[in-house]
Length: 153
Length: 153
Image (cartoon, rainbow over all chains, first blue to last red; front, side, top):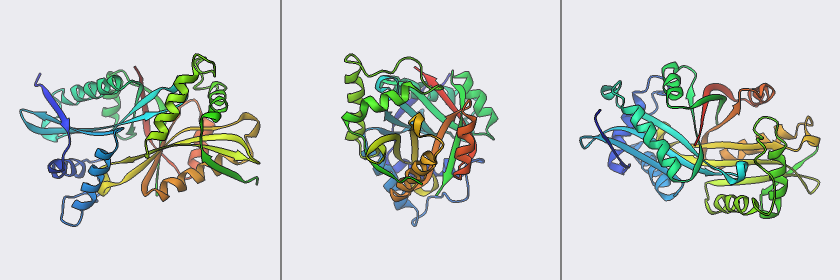
C-alpha cells in the first residue's frame, strides 16, 4: 500500500482543494472555482480555520504531491461527562487516486487524530446518494445511526 | 405563545443541563449525573466552549427559569466559496415544557444566530429512532438529505 503523509493545508493548496470540490458529482454545484474574484473568499476561510485551534484542514500527500483533503472540527460538549466529539468534513481523494485504499488510510488517520485530541466520538454525514461512501464508512466501524439534516440559508 | 429569552450557559446551569441529558430516553446511557466526582469534567467542557469564539452553548429561559438548551458550532470551510456552516447540537427542552412550540421557537432562534454569524448552511443529526424529531426538523425547513455516522472511540 502506498503511504500517505499529512500536513495542515496552506494557501498554496487552495487551487487543488477547490478543484477537488468542483469535480465532486454530488455536492458540486457550479459554484466553486479558483478565480481572482473568488480567491479572497477561499483565503479568508482558510485563515478562519487556522485561527481556531479546534479547526484543522489537512492535505494528504503521496510522494510529495497532494492527493486528498480532510477537515476536522473538535467540539467540546456537556453530554457523556463533558465528552469532546470530532466532526469530519471535506473528505476528498483526487479521482485518479481512488480505489487504492487511500481514502480508508486517510480516514483511519483522521480518526486517530480525533482520539489523540481526546474525542470520545467521531461523527460525519454523507449525502444519501453516496451509497458507496456509506458502505465505506460502515467498513471503518461507523454506525449509521442518525439522519442528517441540512438547511441552506 | 410564551416568549423565550436566550443567554449563554454558565457554570450554575450545569446541573440543569446534565439532568436534561440524563432524562433523555434515546441518548441517555446512565453515564450523566451531576455529582462531586463528575462536576469537574462538565465544568471543563463548559470552559472549553467559552474559550472558543466558534462555540456557543445557550440556555433558553421562560419567565426567568431555564427550560432548554442548544449548542452551536460555527465551522469555516472551503466549499461553496468559503461558506461557513452552523452545526446544531444538544437540542433539549425540559419534559414539562414540551408540546408548547418552545422547541420550534428555540430552533428558529438558533437558525437566525447562524445566519447572523454569516453561515450559509445549518446542519444537525438526529438519531434514527427519533421519528417525531425528524418531522419537527422537516417542518422547520431542513432537508433530510444525509446519513449520519457515529463512531465511539
